[in-house]
Amino acid sequence: MPITSLPISTLDSPDRVILGIDPGTNFLGYGIIRKQGRKVEMLAMGIIDLHKVADIYLKLGRIYERIQGIIDSYLPDELAIEAPFFGKNVQSMLKLGRAQGVAIAAAMSRQIPIYEYAPLKIKQAITGNGQASKEQVAEMMKRMLHLRDEQMLSYLDATDALAAAYCHYLQSGHENRTEGAPRSWKSFVNHNQNRVSAGLTGPQQRLAAALAKTNKKV
Image (tube, rainbow, N blue to C red; front, side, top):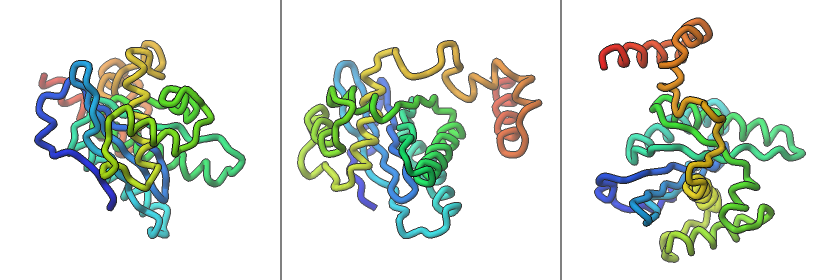
């Protein structure tokens, strides 16, 4: 599958690694940046190509597995994900929502804090224009991260994901997260033991129980 990246060896002692995701059920884009001091660089970007997979549930399963694999490889500190665009096509919106939900679930399973950004906000942060085209976003990411031509992909889903990660970096403490909310699923479990045990069933309950058991050992 199309991917451009730096060697994993460059991941030694990062100050902050951010995974960006542009959800989709045909092509899901991802981009990973690392901040070290004042320097920000791209670690990887690529797509998860699912356009030949007919079954929607198989698509979602593969998204879940691939996102977990990316997280395990690059160990991001945070996930920045683009919110579904509320357009006229309800079916497309529902498909994007499913892909986004599965990607979020994969990050939750690895206890990664999650931040969501509207497409307009990402475009505004990157280009200064909330109505910018995907091509303009890609060009700005190329300039901001000093990417070479051979590092760029023809899939704009990848550069959109990279833009989501960079948008989160630019927020500098003003992330789109509810004030006072826990920074991760683990944090939520720590502060809401009764609510979690009473309100969840199945895989979520097993995850909560495992986290609670881990906390007791610490």
